[in-house]
Structures are given as C-alpha cells and as structure tokens.
Length: 115
Image (cartoon, rainbow, N blue to C red; front, side):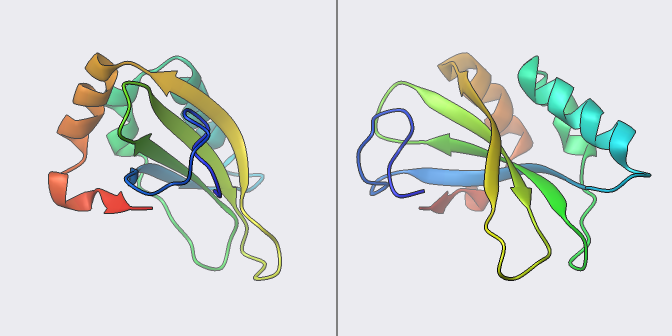
C-alpha cells in the first residue's frame, strides 16, 4: 500500500499485524464466507480460529493497520498463489480504539510490524 487509506499519507509510522488467514477454494467457500462475515460484522474475538494457510493455494489474509492517528483499519486481502498476480484488498473496515484494543488482545505486541 503506497499510502494509508485513513490519513492518505505515506506508510511511515504505521504498523500492521496479521489477524486471520484461510484458504480459498471451492471446498473452503463456507469458511471464507464465514471469515468475511466476521470482518464485516467486526467480530474480532472469533478471528483467532482462522489459522489455515497453504503456500501452494490462494489465501485470504486479514490484517489490522494502525498509524499515528486515531482511526484504525482492518483489511481483508486476497493473496494469490500465482507469483505474478498481485494481492488485492477485498474488504476495508474502519475500527475504533476500543475495537483495536480487542484485536491487540488477540495479537501479541511483538507481532506488530512496521509498514
């Protein structure tokens, strides 16, 4: 991401953390739908159960993003297996400071990385 979707500035001073992942596929369609629903409904407490990942398959990845501003965001990204295909942001949800506190309980402090 070249610029923060919240403050529209460069990503310096921003951090991200992986919240959840699951595999994309015909058999996994119900699980992907469930994950998207939890993100859209801001049900951060249940996302810790989504830990599926396959390096040779397309995956859905959910990240929390925080920066030097009050607004925070959670994004759901389609991460394709194909090396030449770019990741695509599919869902963006603004979160409150209270919601970020819930997310931070799920994600250890050491898992937050600079962008």
